[in-house]
Image 1 (cartoon, rainbow, N blue to C red):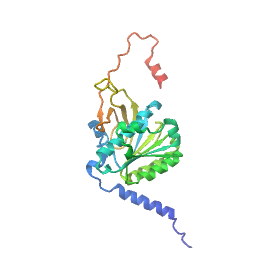
Image 2 (image 1 turned 45 degrees about the horizontal axis):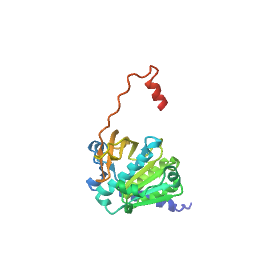
Image 3 (image 1 turned 45 degrees about the vertical axis):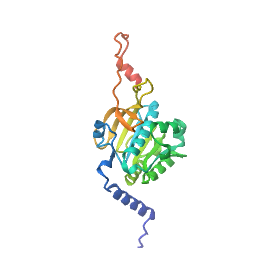
Image 4 (image 1 turned 120 degrees about the vertical axis):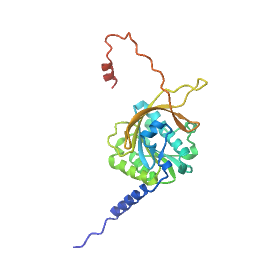
Length: 271
């Protein structure tokens, strides 16, 4: 009985998996295996920082925190370009499907410059669908001309477990920083190395009473390399570094509340 010839597609997939595995074990300088954020306690929890050659998820704590989550992704990209030596000549790619753009708006050039991300180092790719975005991100993560690849997704259906595993494998091949910016935080299982939940936070005014540094409450809600935790971070857009922000004072609850006030009931309604 004749043996059927091997499927070329299966052979190609096997070769790609083998090459990706070899690339993933290529030695990387110890000081460039992770993107240190500059906050010692946070970097310790992350095992030295956000692992390079890996996929990370950024999600908003609530719908109105999406702008803060997007700002965090942009700040991480600017920080990576400045601090990782092998990224000195690489670019940042932002992939945005049309639906995500309609819901959240497009990137704003002057705002990016003010944040510390030069427009000359950014490629803004717009695609028709979420599946196109996942495909483009997989291909881009394997490109060693890119330092950071950010994929923005409104609809999680394009990011099933198989797609996320392919993205993780592609990130290991390229050696850059892969960031999945989700519009919603209700995603389930994921092979991503970390999931960072971002909430907007108030910042202290500057010395002249003007706007202070952008500040967020960052929660490490999933971490394959250590524990979780929560930090209040500010972004210094001049030095391109993160700093731990002091907590602002919170007003003391009123003691003359009505007897009908019930914290538990309020909590249930707020949830």
